[in-house]
Length: 227
Image (cartoon, rainbow, N blue to C red; front, side, top):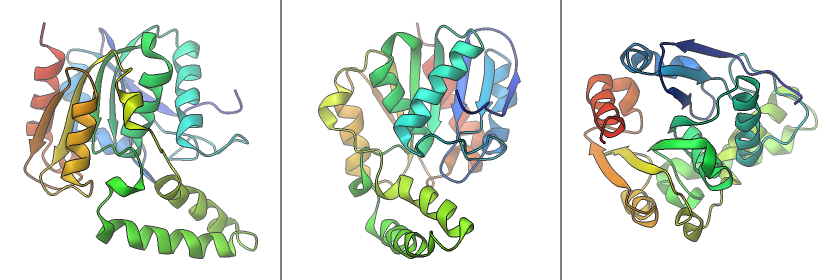
């Protein structure tokens, strides 16, 4: 493993891993840590090249991040965990659940997408323009190169085929905002393709965990505590 993840942890009980979105860090979940750690041993991780976790030398892709996550679990002797992934973190959790089903207890996907077509065009077009510009200057500027890598996650990844979702064995909650940047039909399709998943919409945009923590946390805890 070429990196060591920065993370924060709190609580006792079953392990629960929180995965932030693109360009963010574990601080995104400041509204979740206390509520979840009252019942679970919560780990909020900075993904490779995000926050205080180094970039390292390996590919900067969703699939590499999923493999990084496996190494994190092995290093911390976590055999199985609940996963809550937001945005790109949800995409990482999806890939992880497909690749390593025996390591996933329950799965919460917040604002995830299978491909760039799942994002509303009003949001995706500026991302694609920014990616092309950053890529053009990447050889001349380190900051442009890093920006191109970050935007590339939303242009080139995760490209998960819907049929792959049918292999997920974990009980799954798909949760999104009513005005999310992810297209509602795309979110509904993800839920439909995962066997016996639950779908919940909360009034708000892509950042419902941050903006409406009480409502978001209750939906997640209700799901986790179901028999």
